[in-house]
Amino acid sequence: MSKIQKTMILDGRKTAEKIRGALAEKIRKHGKKPKLRVILVGEDAASLAYVTRKEKACAEVGIEYECLRFPKEVQEEDILRAIAETNDDRNVHGLIVQLPLPPHIDKRNVVAAINEMKDVDGFTQWNAGKCFLGKTDGLLPCTPKGVMRLLSEYGIGVTGKDVTVIGYGDIVGKPLCLMLSSAGATVTACHSKTRDLKSHTQNADIVVSAAGVANLLTADMVHPWSVVIDVGINRVDGKLRGDADFEAISRIADISPVPGGVGPMTVAMLLENTYEAFLRLESEA
Ligand code: NAD
Image 1 (cartoon, protein in one colour):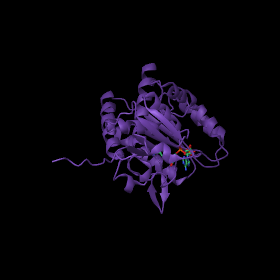
Image 2 (image 1 turned 135 degrees about the vertical axis):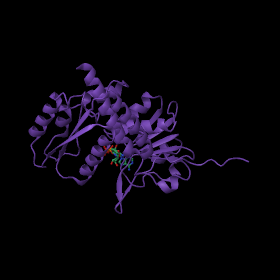
Image 3 (image 1 turned 30 degrees about the vertical axis):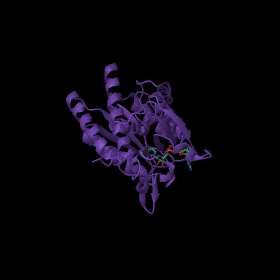
Image 4 (image 1 turned 45 degrees about the vertical axis):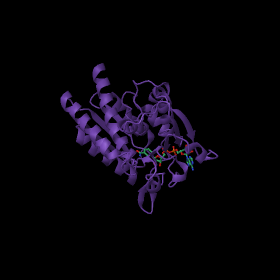
């Protein structure tokens, strides 16, 4: 009797839990705790929710967490001073400035001020350069790193595969295209100027959507038995949704859900980056 093959849900929540468990064990064995500092400006509800999630995840693995909060009227120089102090503080190993920032603060100046060794978001030019060169001694941005890790944890190799990435943003799509290429995939980068999106997705072995457009990727656009990784975060009728039509695609292809897919992987990679930064800074001390 032939067995009916079923599609798979790539469960980021469970995978991240496993990663956190392994990391907690490494930190416990090491004895000294890494420390992450977050700079948060203003009262943006989504930013508050994200930092709360990061704080909880740090507590779970034994990373010390500290949040420096500033009112939305804060001047850029005050943020730059807090960054400089953190750069010099030997007891802090990772630093993130939660984005977005108010419009009067130049994000580029802020990111550029972060010591690359503590840049656990992987946003500085130094770490972006490491990613560009395919080097492993930099800190990679958490969301694309989380996508790569989710694939590898499910045993899905990318070498020689045709991978289409929808979205070419600085934080997700662009670095992900580089990481996939470095890992041996043949990558097609699509964006808002792409003329016929379906022609690039329908024959791909793997499609990653990081555009932030609800229902952008529908079942007719993907190949049966392909893999879809949904990075998008959209609010539809008060509910969190990805870029993909999850219900329809999950019947024909393997897919990561939203919520519960790439989101928890992103936080897990932030924890791993903080531990990596801690080990490197300790070895240099
Ligand atoms: P971005 O605005 O920097 O980039 C969006 C990209 O999508 C651009 O290249 C744009 O050209 C492309 N795009 C927009 N509309 C398109 C369309 N109709 N067809 C094809 N391409 C289109 O955004 P980002 O920061 O890269 O984030 C992308 C999405 O990923 C957002 O929904 C964001 O919330 C989500 N995100 C999720 C996580 C996570 O942890 N799950 C982390 C970061 C970002």
